[in-house]
Length: 422
Ligand code: UD1
Image 1: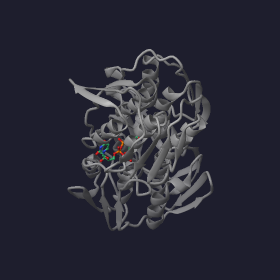
Image 2: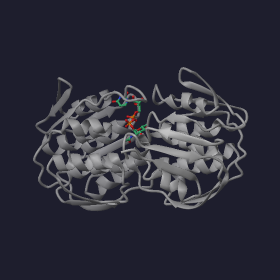
Image 3: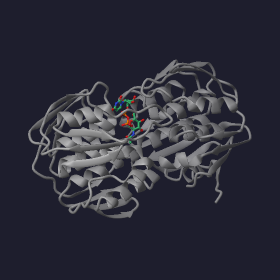
Image 4: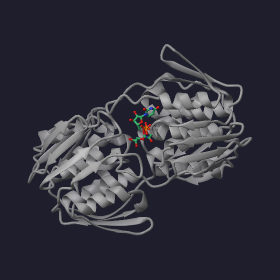
């Protein structure tokens, strides 16, 4: 997992076998932040072994919590916290540390974080987080790149999010659980990770209603207890694997998945000619590798097509005969993979936030750069069907979201190697 890591892929092998999907990073991160709210010990199970999780564990420790981390289980005792300032060097390593603000403010009436920078997929503002916390009674000062929030005690409020931001919904939910009175969050995000966080908080004694719908009602309680909780399976990892099998052809059973979290993706895969059978927590994907273009893929907040699967799906469409259109509506700069796919022979034209993908008969191996996590996964997928060898540089980005991606694919018969340099 070093910055110089590269992944080499030899194309042309169908994927076969069974794979267990790990727990969801995007559910585990807010849930670990939320352990700061508890006056007892929390044991969180099925936490993936990923760099962002280790950063979150380091942050909890830096704040004074006692944390045992033996993947996939994290045990957090946050009864005694010694600091309410998130160290800048840790904050810089992970954008998601922004949602430590909600729990710190709720329980300790103070939080200081550094403003997260932009990233390669867009500017990623935090105005909705800050406006919401202010509505709950926090006073917020921004000085020299730091955000300092304090309150005598948070109180319930009616909040409306201009856009259904996942992070803002989570941050405000965590702040509101200990606020005095009732908070209503309108136009809330509805992602399964929101529901998981609400279930975790409710397990600890919170009163969050409406998770998974567009209005959340949170009745503040005096305190939360500890508890044990298992994270939901990672729908983006499951979706990436399903797309991979669809491209290479083959027959793969995914275990520990929630097909009902992947509605939009499975619909598009079926439209592309893939056979998918689903059970409650299992899914079988079969493909002969002969794909059809799909008319339109439009990313949107859940239950729409997830922006995190846009790049992997574009890798698939690049070899699906016909013209497909991909519209990215969530992040403004999420087409960095296009130029790299084109280096491999894809025929894609971008006009602002829409990509026109003309499927080509084959891709050719090349040396390509992973600009971010999902773009990196997309390039590995492209390599699986390309002629010859593809080398994906900056592969450490992929390790931020997929636990041992290369090993996972090798287990299904792919010819994938990690080339590490010390
Ligand atoms: C989360 C996910 C990320 C996913 C994204 C969208 C985590 C750790 N990350 O990111 O993988 O791609 O949801 O599904 O869960 N926005 C504002 N103001 C704000 C906050 C957001 O304008 O204060 C905008 C963003 O610029 C973006 C849109 O809202 O255009 C969605 O962002 P958001 O849902 O907040 O994404 P994250 O929570 O950062």
